Amino acid sequence: MDAGVDVFIDEEPRDWLRPKAAVGAEPVGTVVPAARAKAPEVPADVLPDQLGLFQQWLADHDKLPYASPSAPRVCPSGDPSSGLMVFTDMPSHEDCASGTLLSGEAGRLFDRMMAAIGRDRASLYLAAASCFQTPGGQLSGPPAKQCSDIARHHIGLAAPRAVLVFGDAASKVLLGLPVTRARGRWHEIDTHAGPVRATATFHPAHLLKRPADKAHAWADLQMVMQGMNA
Image (cartoon, rainbow, N blue to C red; front, side):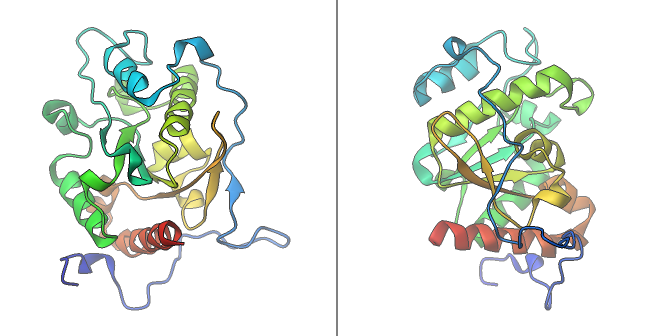
């Protein structure tokens, strides 16, 4: 392709990773609830109810999950009014060094993926479930649940038309499913402002290790592009 994203196109890609539909199951493409969370367990009076104030809270609050005085904090970037919100799980080592989510080689692949659907970092809103890199690189236990509540509040304030979730850890936190089960269909994320459509795809770091999955990622991106244009 002219945009240099031909790595995402294969001849008649077959989605081997999509689970087979069971008898009576919802057809692929049906919007399904994403782990139907109840009201956030983080106290409502702790979470600012305006996006600008919430962004400042993420940047300053010392009681965020995994926060410590010496831990690098990587905050959201991009345009919250773009209609497309992109979530990853947490900053990588490179992200912590650069202060930018999805940097380095994975970030360059991410940029090409977004260019394939006519987007760039200025025309999407990029955030992480945790502003901090967690001990051992895992999101689990009560802190992960708190991250999920905070992320849902964030999504409600940004009110995007769609959320694209990158990677297994972020998919489990936001959609309650591993990426192999979440991708290829739309879900609904419950927020205080109402449900928001979301889907998941493979993290760019995964695609660098497993290039064969790029065809599946391209199919996911096409679905997002079609959904945004619908």
